[in-house]
Amino acid sequence: MSKQLTLNIALRDGLRFSSFYYKDENSQTYFILKAFSEASQQIGIQQILLWGDEQSGKSHLLQACCYQLAEQGLHASYLPLKILSSHGTQILSGLQHSDLIVIDDIDNILGDKSWEEALFNLIHQARLVGQRLLLSSTKNPNDFKCHFSDLLPHLIQGSCYQLIPLSQEEKPQLLQFRAQQRGFSLNDKVIDYIYKRYPQDLRSLLKILDTLDRESLQKKAKITIPFVKQILGSIN
Image 1 (tube, rainbow, N blue to C red):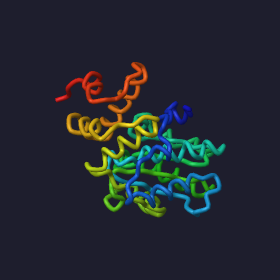
Image 2: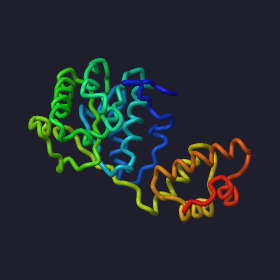
Image 3: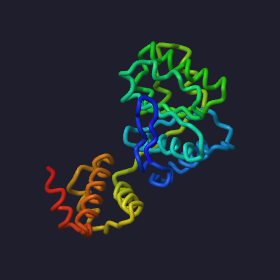
Image 4: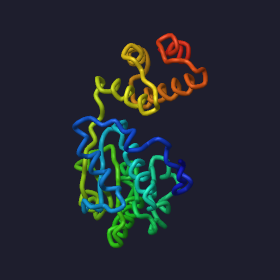
């Protein structure tokens, strides 16, 4: 399913709550976001700021919120500022018909007064009409520095949650979890081989999983260590 959003930015298929592997420290945040994006929204929260390291999974959860709301017949707008900021502050206007406004990577525009004022106006208007707001940042909100002084209180006035990244020891568990989500399994030897010989950042590991899944389906082959060597070759 591909739901076209602001400026034709589309949600990535597969980024659902069901495909998010969370550690115990993130379980409360996971379930709060899941409840926050229910159509009925019984938890009484209008604004959430989610922060954490770049590869902690923030964008996955933000898009999962959009999918869940859209599947219940409501409208969500997803604005990843790393991609959209070059289009100017006008991207923050015209969102009055959205039930949920999701703004990813707000720290990408902090320090720019015109952007800060536009973000302040968006938050202010959304609160007046009861729209839900979901924001994300790689920075701790305590470290925010805003040139538009009225913005900071608006950013931290809602609920703030930190997303803790997976440890190096937990990343292989993520690989197994995501493989099972796709309908196949990786044995411990294959996971250990991948993990020790290829880049260990989450983006690279998930890209490797995508490649192995696609190639194994095309070749109708099991994913074994020789198969991994054949498909991925050597990466120094």
